Length: 394
Image (cartoon, rainbow, N blue to C red):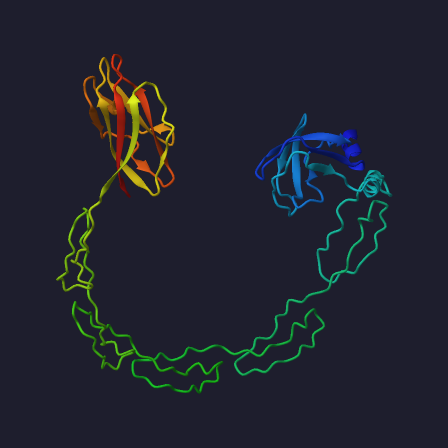
C-alpha cells in the first residue's frame, strides 16, 4: 500500500468545499484543512457531517483540488451543499491501525495460505483433523452422511400416511397420503346442481349449474326499454334504450343567434348556441404642444386581462413639414412593430396614419404599453399628438 494511502487511513483527513455544489454535481473543489487524502481510488468521504445534508460520496479521482465524485453512496441521499461544507475522511485510527498490522503479518505455518481444502466426493465419509502446517490446516475434511438411492413409496388413492423407519437421511421410506385429481363433469345449459360421489379429492364428479350467454337485441334510435323473457343467463333478450350521438354544430363566428335542434339523435345534436359580438376597445396616449424627438414614453397603461392588439392610429393637431412624424408602441419595453417600417407614420403635411400590421399582438394580464416619439417634422415638427391603440379582450 503506498505510504500516502496508509497515512491517510491512519490519520483523519478533513477539508471543506471551496464552492457550492448542486445535488447532481459530479465534481467538487475541496480545500484541505488537515491530513493527506488517499492516493488510491476509489475512497469515500462524508459531506456535511452532523448536518441535515449528510451525504457519503465516492471519490474516483483527485486532480489538484478537484475531486471527481459519485453521489448518494451507502444509503445516503444526494443534497446541495454550500461553500465551506465539511469534507471528512476519518476512520478510527486505532482500530484501522490494528487491522492493517494484522493484514501485514506473515501467517503461521509457512506464510502462505494452504492449497484447496480436500474435496468431499462421496457420501458416508468420516471427518479427519488436518495435520498440515500450512495456514488453516488445509488438509482437514468434514464428514458426510450416507444417502441411498431408494425413493419414498408412491401413494395410491385412499392411502393413509406412514411414518418412515429407515436410517438414511429424511427416512426415505416414509409416505404421504395422496390421491389423484379427477375431472369434474361439464355443465350444459339447464343442468341442475349434482353432488359428487367420487373418492378422488373434492369429489371431482360433482357439477355446478351453468347457463350459456345469449346476445341482447341491439337498440335503435328511439327504442324503449323491454324486459327479457329468455331462460338463458341474465335474460339475454332484454333491451336497453339507446340513441346515437350526433355532432353539435360548431360556433365559428361572433354574433350568431341561438337555434333549437330538431334532430332525433340524443340531445338534439344539431342545436346551436348564440355567440355575442366581440367589442373593440381603445386606449389613448396624448402629448400637447410642439413635438420633438426622440422622446421615450414614460406613462404606462397596464392590461387587466388577456387582450389582442388590433391597430394603432396616430394623429396631430397641426401637420409636420419637411419630414414625417413617426411613433412607436412598446409592450413591456419591447416594440410591437418588429418590422419598424410598419410603425405609425404621419407624412409631411398629413395629420393622421393607421398602422394595423402589428407583429406582437398578444398581451397577458399585467403586461403594459408605452408610446415613443421616434421622429418629428424636420422643418415644422407638428403638434398636439394623439395615439389610439385598439384592442379586443380574449
